View 1 (cartoon, one colour):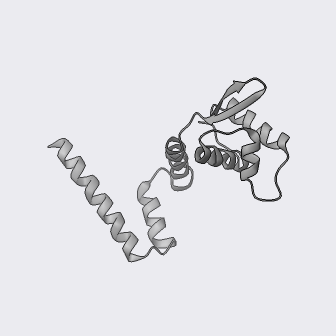
View 2: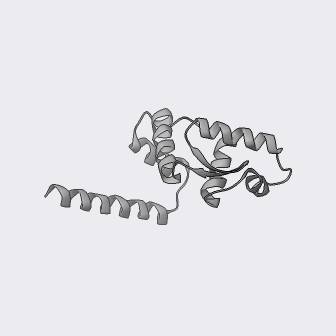
View 3: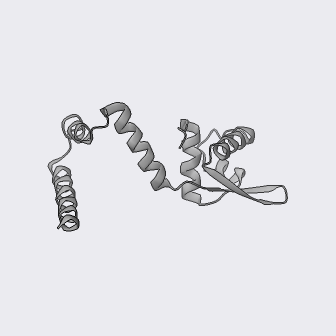
Length: 127
């Protein structure tokens, strides 16, 4: 997956929410001031070239839809973040979250539960 600019990612967020849309539908979702039609149309074409978006043609009208799921994008983006900013260490990610983000005890407890559940599942697969 190619990296997306902020503008491209914004359009993808809109498409994931709308499921499919014409350019005018996307523009309607933007906050004011709305971008020009040509700007959004260009972003959509770039997303198509990158393989994120497909379209169905109905005459001259193109209805766009995501080709990449939000979940797949999130997984890829998070993996990139871990590699680039934490040297690939998930331990450093968790340490950062706990120490730098001042997580409340309730969230830390939820993280412990998630880890415990994952350990149980892993133990069940190996045993």
